Length: 141
Image (cartoon, rainbow, N blue to C red; front, top):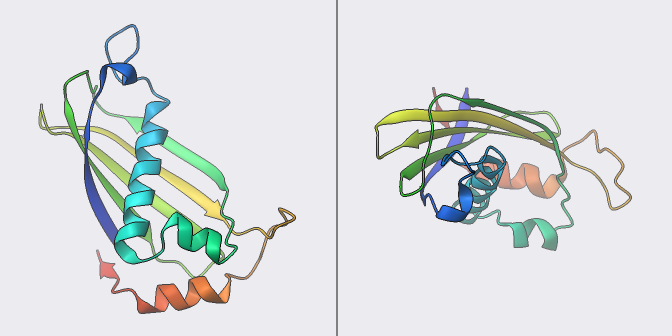
C-alpha cells in the first residue's frame, strides 16, 4: 500500500465534549477535515488549489471506529494518510491517538469522488490531480 501522510496535534477543547465529558462523536469528522486540510497544505494540493483547478471532491463514504475516549484537556495526535490508488477517487485513512493516556482513540476512513460542476460523477481522474500524484514521493507499507 502506497501513501503520503501528515500528523497534527489536536488540543481537546471544552466545546468538543458532550454531557458525558467525552469528545462528541461528530467532532471526529471535524478532526478528519483538519487532517485532510493540513495534508493538502503540506503536499501542495490545498483546498485553494482544488478550487482553483475546479476539482470538486464530495465525501461519499465515511467509517469511524472508537477504541477509547478523548476528554476535555487531552491532547490527541491525528495521523492522516492519503492512499495511492488509480481509480477516480481519493481515500484517506485516519488514526487518532490519545497522547495524554497513550491509547489508540479511534480509526477512520473517508472516500471522496470527483464530480463536475453539475455534480455528475467523473469516471476518470482529472489530469491536474494525476500530475500532482505523479510528483509525490509515496511511502510503502
